[in-house]
Image (cartoon, rainbow, N blue to C red; front, side, top):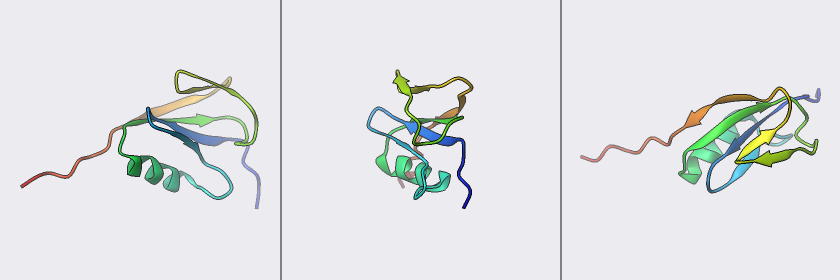
Length: 78
């Protein structure tokens, strides 16, 4: 298996998480959705094991890409 030199980082007011060797992007988004809070998603151009600073829920890495803000869809009531 090849090692990625990037990872995805998601953060909400409740938690943060990244993709890693055991969690892919789909699993990361499900984890954040299940938590029930809106979250932001970033593509971070370094390995998930590399140290970096976080400020205001965002990774402080040169070249980081903001991918969007995701809100949890609530079930419609009848």
